[in-house]
Image 1 (cartoon, one colour):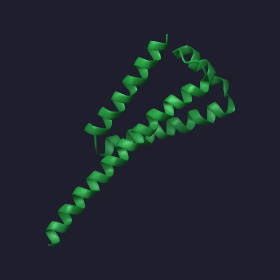
Image 2 (spheres, helix red, strand yellow):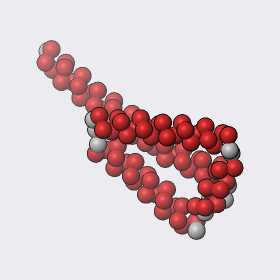
Image 3 (cartoon, rainbow, N blue to C red):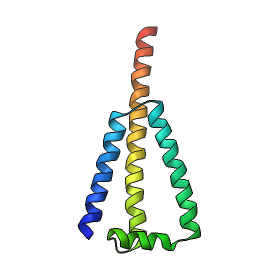
Image 4 (cartoon, rainbow, N blue to C red):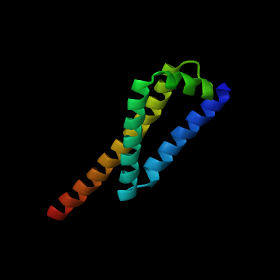
Length: 103
């Protein structure tokens, strides 16, 4: 059962990396906003009913709910990091083009 969660986490990391490196534009921004809304709704639900994490953790083969939260936060942080990196890289390209036009 432990291998199932490991495969799922690795797949999630790969999906985040692929999504962040291939997609840009309004659709990606809309997906991010929907993801943030879903995250906020689930966060409120899990605050009200904290045992939901224990049940989810056991269902996917993780020992404790806090470990599952940590794994999910690592994936979310990776997505945020990739998104920020791509945004800054895009700004660098824009500034370089702008400065070349001005010069």
